[in-house]
Length: 409
Image 1 (tube, one colour):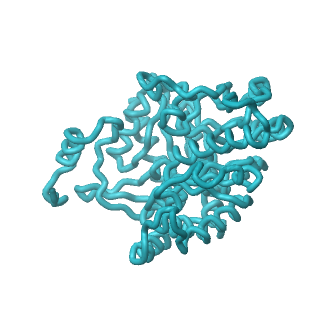
Image 2 (cartoon, rainbow, N blue to C red):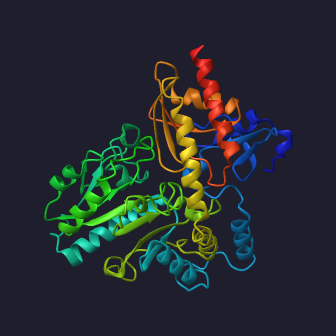
């Protein structure tokens, strides 16, 4: 069925989804038809400032010309070979990604959840083959409030009832401790612990930034106990927090990076596990793989993404504009905002629950031309593309201020 977008209202498109699409999301009632940079346009021609950036997947803005050019060029050549054959894009991509992460080996995958699953498998294999963990007894320490994806194994260590209810039985082998508490991690480690898996900043939990000494302490603990430190930088990495990786901001180098979202430039799904050969090299042919992982189209786009990051421009923009965003948001504390947490161009804003839910605030922001996403009741997340301008940020904060004033009236 072909649909003429000009002849269908926003409500019509939403009704089509409601009738035929599984109800696994509750999106805001805006139907995006086109986008460029930090702005999107709906089917009625109204423009909105995108302050979600697809959960950081659109870090470099919608339709970045360098990334679009790379995708179009590759579309005219070859898009998929499977890993049964070599292709001329994968080698350059994994070489550049390893260099960016200061590592030497890459497992290319597609989605962020696949990267996490791959990291778990790799950690277990390393634990049995290198560390000497007892057969089928490997365990991984994780943090309360985590969000690493929605596969059955990943939700097995979630403490969010919405992620776990009616989806058991769950995969064993995980121990969850309070986030930000390094001593609790050390207490949970035993002779069969193979890894500690953490988000350097917890995104879905509301942009929870741990104490500055937390990740360095985790690095010291894991090194001393011969345990891998796995950093899930799928949302926090690739420029979002003012550095290539959030771990860079606290002077920490994990054993494995889990990457995704922005790695595909908002064009195709691209993810990866990145580490050194003494860890990643424990996997053998046939033990892990993906038909689409490392496909030529994804590799070409991913390589173009890395070229943008290698200039340092986007990390610097995130650092500098992030300070402005933080200062502007903090002026709203006590005026409908309870607290602000931020790192680079990534902010969690706690709304006074007596005033409104986060969802209601996002609905009102949408009416004023700003798209944001709520989480955990009264918190909203702001993560505009890194190409956002000062004027864009000022506009977004002004709209939030106006929404809060209206709610308080």
